Length: 77
Image 1 (cartoon, rainbow, N blue to C red):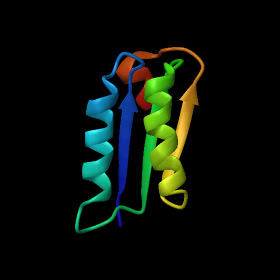
Image 2: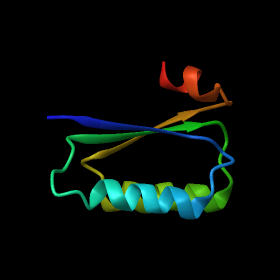
Image 3: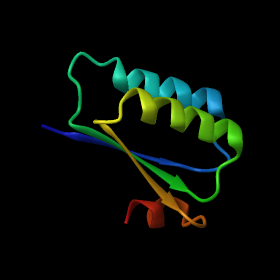
Image 4: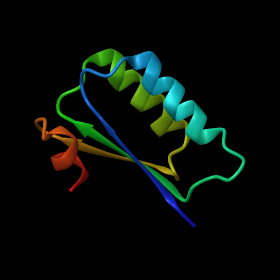
């Protein structure tokens, strides 16, 4: 039993986020949940990636949206 925690900056490349999430969900041992922390307001292309995986894996993926950037340390607290 384990969880995956992924903090994501609004400056992240959507392709890289897609590849990271794809890799997480293609593992042979599936995590109990995937918690993605949106560290600030996302542009629409990043939101589209998050929405795709949230809709595809609604029982596993949890999205925590922060209203403004807290940087990596703050986003993980």
